[in-house]
Image (cartoon, rainbow, N blue to C red; front, side, top):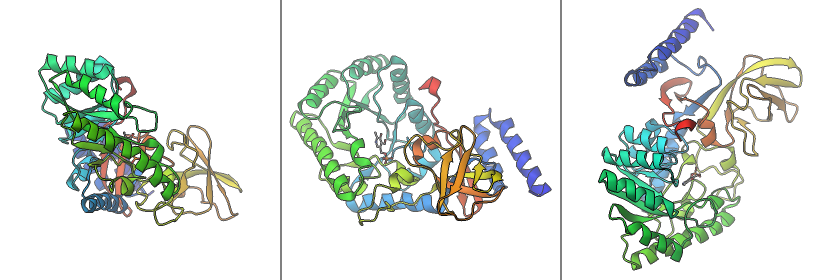
Amino acid sequence: MDRRLFLSSTMTSGMIAATSSIPATAAAAAALEAGGLTQATIATPALVVDLDAFEANVNKMAEHCRQAKCGFRPHAKTHKCPAIAQRQMAAGALGICAATVPEAEALAAAGIRGVLLTSPIVDVGKIGRMVALASSGADVMLSIGNQKQPVLLAEAAEAAKVDLAVLVDLDVGDRRTGILPGEPAVELARQIARSKRLQIKGVQAYAGHASHTVGFEARQKVSREAIGKAVETKKLLVKAGFDAQILSGGSTGTYNIDSAIDGMTELQVGSYVFMDVDYRRIGGSDGQTVYADFQPSLTVLTTVVSATHADRVSIDAGTKALDTTTTNRPEAKSWPGLAYAKFGDEFGGLTSEGGGKLPALGERLEFIVPHCDPNVNLYDRLYACRGDKVEAIWPVAARREYSRG
Ligand SMILES: Cc1ncc(COP(=O)(O)O)c(C=O)c1O
């Protein structure tokens, strides 16, 4: 690196550190820093967004939903980033889903309306924070899939004198969260309705067992069966006198299946903005083995830091930088034939699968991550790049602070 570049990169990172305790100026400092950066000067490992691919994904999903006459409320569990949520809203989203209370808080703080907390919460601290959000004027909705939550929510909402919109969360086959569809869901709705503060707006049905089913025909079968149960339950709720208009659910893997189902009102798609290796392997509706409806826009930028051996090199991205909790391995974006192996916390090992050339010491490589959501959760910032130039630095503002839930 030449002296001028070295000085500008060290000075700007010092500037960020100096201002990071002043939230009002953090965004301005990040913009200033981004102004001087290119991909060649970002300190690695770093999380990089290819803006052209990202914007194409945001627009493609929005256009699909417009044509299918289905709404979409994208899931922020993927990006935890209000700057991205704002772009999804600008593309026509009805609101944004949150998996955690900190995500809901960060989205509301950024002025996002229609924030739906999709996870159950059953402790008074988290319930209190969601009620406080609603009391502050934030437009939030909660999903309820168990019998404890309405009791706690009703109590907190009554104490705060605030009304809360809720969806009945259904377990439509993945056995993770939610009440069983049909009569158990109607019974739960009756319990919820005992509080005048809780207003039922519809149902939520996420089918995690459908999203990554390999092969389009098989995926279609699983998803139609799952969402079919939600459609029927929504009808039962209406028959029982509830104003159940919303059916919120679906995923990146089933967006083009679920949006065609009569009664589905909105998609909770998440990964489509970034994509990852796990999703690329589920196969497309065109019969191809690679699911290419959306482009990989998220990568981890790494540097080769050791090339002592002829048959392998080491990069500066181990398990602290690349999430490898699923079975797939990171894939080098522009270097076919490289195999990534875990080398502990700080390093990854690269070997050549077909005997081809290995990258040299100091070479920079981008990797498509196995699973985008947990990988984003490892970083505080996303470098949004147009070609080689860093156009913006987006804080991962809602990154899970485990101590705060
Ligand atoms: C509740 C909920 N909705 C929607 C999604 C869809 O996400 P994706 O599009 O990334 O599969 C998920 C993913 O885990 C989820 O948990």
